[in-house]
Image (cartoon, rainbow over all chains, first blue to last red; front, side, top):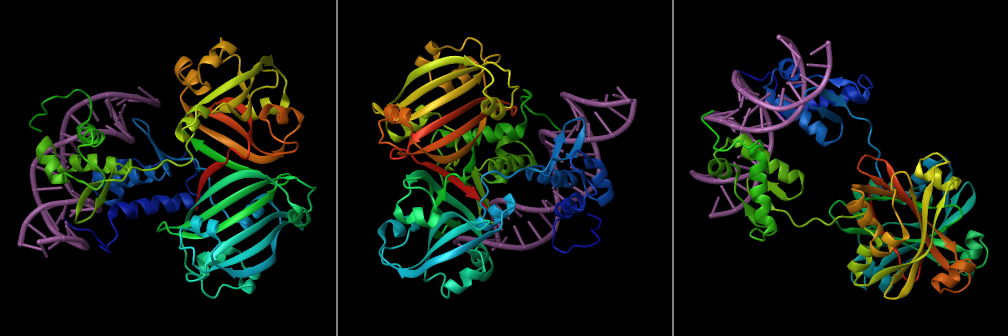
Length: 241
Length: 241
DNA sequence: AAGTGGTCTAGACCACGGC
DNA sequence: CCGTGGTCTAGACCACTTC
């Protein structure tokens, strides 16, 4: 090979990719716009066709771009993310509600069998247990009971939870990379305590969501059980054949 | 190029891919086993390195194979499909229950506003409406009301539904390629009719799932509203950050 | 006919892992 | 050290779409 001007370790195809990506991000290119052809990219960036091609292939893989044989390569419409894991605060913000929480109790527990089992930890593990009423626009929205392993999240306090969302704490203070959550959903009837906390009539149907949160290594991070007022919340999901 | 023995239109990299895939399917290769290296594949199949590489890259993309730089390429563990769209029959079979349905009514309706709206069709569209009680092991499990556009599914009858699952009918008789379904889930309380049909106590909490089925072109195919006995069913989903 | 993406070659050098 | 995957070249032919 003759030369490559700068060899700062980052592959040529990635550089080309980034150039195109940034032009999309900046709004210079919008969905439907044509991207330079493989040959143009190869010429402009001084690389071989295969390399330019690799860049476009990669972008297509990421759904950034669509390729139509015999026609060209075009900026893809922004893809909508289904089954996205969002925090309560994010959920409310998306709907235009103000969100906050009222902490009922925080305790350290151990031996709650159902919880440790779902958490995939020994039954003797000490867990930080928080009960919160989730409020949307000052109205009670859900009752949530959340468990976190003490050994992993030392220093967690009622105080820190008052001031930050759990997701923010996990991601920023503890450097957890949240990856996914498994949820089990069913319906239940409000008992006396829930009637009061959620201000619903006796026996009102509630949407119950049990959630196990996992980080990017596949380790369980937290378990939560939430009871949603069914008149104020429904869950959306997409399933694929 | 010197020659390629058979040029039956199918690309070399696909052929190589298929060879490897079939060896996995047959059980000759199991998860963790090493796949031939790029160089071996190139030599054996008489193609260039880039082509052999393409085959492996494609298999990696499909999560069939994992590549570890400096080490080799290995058969990936079978991936579990989350948020999978399955029919009631398939769901029950997976749990080891026998499933069948009792058809309550079949009618042709039009102008049910909520339904046509979710179905994304004009309010005047004639819809085939079926009410069924879903049974698992002879016990009532759910009440389902399903709507299908008459113009698209002419010839649909109570009789055909008695004998086949709706998914089977759509996929086999009507050649529909089911792609995904959007579901909205909440909780409701059993009314008098549901109490009888589902044999649950007065006001029992039920899991309500409204589902819109889409084909591979993104067109809505069917809308259904199902009420599940919450003591017998819960819904599982995975969400991604 | 000109341009596009899709496939393919026959080499090359690199970084990395395991022995 | 050798083999692996990762990157890359400088060409080539094909099928396809658009004009």
